[in-house]
Image (cartoon, rainbow, N blue to C red; front, side, top):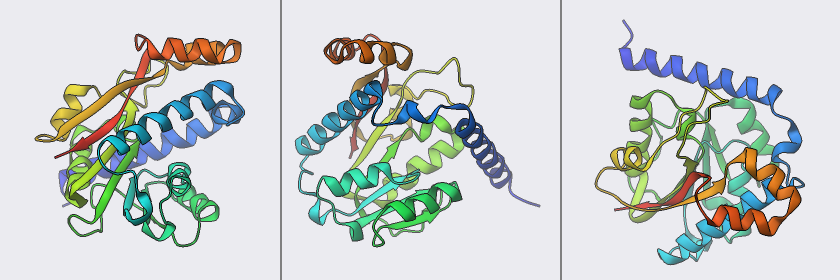
Length: 238
């Protein structure tokens, strides 16, 4: 008989694959295009925040850093790390969805190592990576036990002086039942015993799109106010 955890994980994996397949058909491609002003402002804000935090925590020289991204998709953030100075042979990614991994292999340098699989059982030694990253992965996982196992694996493969980079929703999306926000208390529980350096970021998309088109300066002001920001960005370290 299969273990209950194995069955629950398999069921959750299937749900996640189905949710992403539906989203591919429902979301207009231009929504996440760099030519969308709101999306460009959002990604630039996230970049500035993460670069500032990496510099603050002593990880500004990425040339020798070994980096793993959980839920890497087609490799958008792995390509960003290359722009920031990381070497392709030091970059690793894992994603549940085969098609996204295949696309990443087309877009990324051949030296980047991509794997298709479940991040709750990483095939890497302990303390292998300087940076372990996740971008809007945990909110896509509704099974709390699976979240906990992935968090445990991220801590396991992170070096003692390494960082976990976090960017994810901290509130629920009322229009998307396939995701659920992860608040600060839940992050503290997932990474118990760790220090969190988090900031609220990213203006709520229903506001961001019209404001961004109207005035980038107004977008930045509204986002800086934090009142209508929907994400946490930050680092987690021992």
